[in-house]
Length: 230
Image 1 (cartoon, one colour):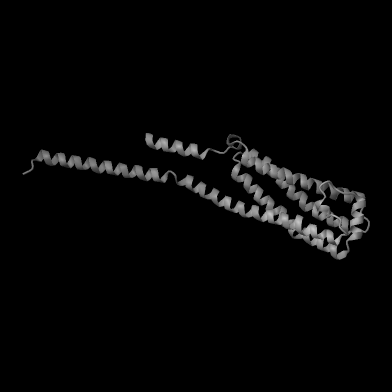
Image 2 (tube, rainbow, N blue to C red; image 1 turned 90 degrees about the vertical axis):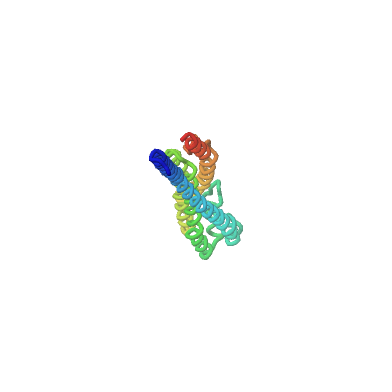
């Protein structure tokens, strides 16, 4: 027969064991819930990286299609003369006049159509890819805007250049002012494209402390250390 003292001791031990299990379960739940926001951020970053890869591939294809393929083929319709879009150093009134005489109405219409299709899609998709690249890799707001600036300007100048080139080729006798504007936009377009590439590279290769991006490995190590201390 078990005495009252032994029964009381058994109940106390059982109560303590239940409390210990309860606290252990609560600690496990809290520990498991802690990484939730980190996992969510990592998931969003991974999704953004997938979109970035798709946009970068599309912009690379459009660059090849517009600049290297179609504008290259347009030289066959212009007596071997290079299209204004590809003249990085610019051009003058005399060159535009010779180009206009070498191209008939159908050739000029085809160039205008290219400007409205691939010539419009390329800067837009390229800008989307590069803005997303900077967004994913630069944590400081001022740095993001500094790296975004050449990309945004490139889109504006590129679309404006398409209109300017079509306008000077449509004139019976191109005036010096219109040609100078189109030539300046062409040069600026290539300069801003190069600066945009540099900005994208800077967003990836600048030191993490300059970009304002936390070291995930260090954060994870700190979290594990806190868990062990706790």
